[in-house]
Length: 346
Image (cartoon, rainbow, N blue to C red; front, side):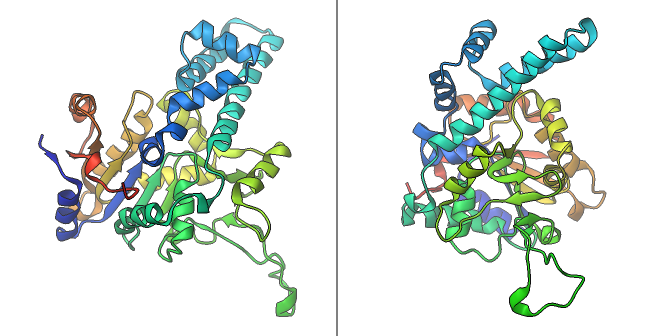
């Protein structure tokens, strides 16, 4: 399997008139600033909380990998259902799981750049140029990141072809009222989902589930986005996040949320080719591989299925790993050097 340059891959796909899809993982955010968005930084933040329960969990499991700890907690909780009727112990496990998830959200928010204008214009423009080919009428952009870097880039670029499915609906639509008395809802998911091409597969900091609708937090005239998010969290409202566990656990969380289910099913039905950046297809990403394989197998006609996946790698270890799992994919696999992408104008 030859390692290609990103520009050559994109040129070939454009000439072939393939539908273009992009899947981004944590490497997208780390390429912006690895000192902020690396997993080690998040784990160190959790450790700095000095919470006795978290400290004990880290020591027992002998790791600070949040996905492993959450997976172990989930397994223990299921075993308790079979072997014990101790409701107090079950409640402690539930509390530990909640504490970890809240800690992760707090960590991402705390370490995040303060506002959109923190990102230099040159970086913003370079990133938008990278994203633009995947925002066509037949393209799709998927991310598993929790942060709002992508949201910021699309918003600040004033890109008119990115559609995240959110919009406002009239709340008094059953009656006639003067135009200046019209009342509209918060930004909710659904009004523009038919043409949606931007998908937060694991949720994100700016998305909230109010029990009926999925709402998107936005700027107002006096507050930055993160400040509005923090206000919600102070009221015990938390972002839509898929956290921890193995692929099955993550898929279960996805299927219990209508927005996440929609995004996952969209990934499962893409056509043409998929390019990945900063996504390592680790042992807890089986559900993503399953979605890709569904896209590769679901269409009988060539134009109705996923033909190929182009996986970005940063190192020789990445290359060896992708080669070792290549046969898991039901479509053609090609790899390219992620460092050949000028994603943030470096």
